Image (cartoon, rainbow, N blue to C red):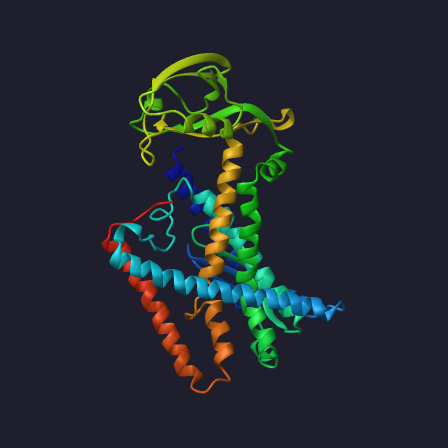
Length: 396
């Protein structure tokens, strides 16, 4: 079954099940507790859970609560300033140096997100939503603000998560510090989680500790894929394990990078590798690196080699470590981007509520808020338009 067929079958099954569950829960909990827009949104609300959470009280050090609130606010301000400034500077780059402009596009499954990447997107988006909404709930409870409802949500294509609705009357009675700390809590937590997972991408020891229950480090470098049109395409295969080049042992990616750093173009290489359990040697001649003209390039994408532990070797392989790494990349990407974009001061986002709370006591605050909203929406729209006009469409 192809990835496209698997996706559409999963999509149909998921939303068919959601529709049946909606009918059952509507009778069990009442129609007001269940919402369904087929293939787009399925939501189940519970006032009982919200009431239970609202009754929770924190009797610890109030200084710690204020410190946490201050962290949420500072992270929120940083995210808002970073988001607006980045979009504005990117727009200027689009007009002055189009080649340096970063593409700005919404994440749309099948268009800007490839079907191969969709499972990673769904898992990372689920983590992002749960962390985001949990942070809002925690911030509200610590501030003594009641929750109106809490529950489960399923978003298209198949992204599960949770949500909380804050009681607006209860929130209105709180000071500005508590208000803006609650509004910024979700984004702050997403950014913190993204930075935390970044450590796993930059530190081999941390990454190994994550996968150590399932995999153990092996000697060599795993060939993930070859680059079309380059020397390795004809002599290496996905799944090969490179163990030496020109009789120099290659035990890790750092060994490979160190070796290739000193290899010029048009160099003959003898690559020793393991393929299907057999050791063999293949030869190739390097070409100029696409980015560094005086450096040799084989045209191979690699990853450190990890072996499955015996107890789980029947259902995972060496590529599972690559998948975990890719998932962490997606978790970092989605969390940091959601954390920043959600703090933009435009309607329906937390950043708008954050800015509204700050300006509500300011003279002509409503007019100023509308100006800020219009400016932000304008630079977002212009970024997207310029991305399309410059042909910078991408698929992750």
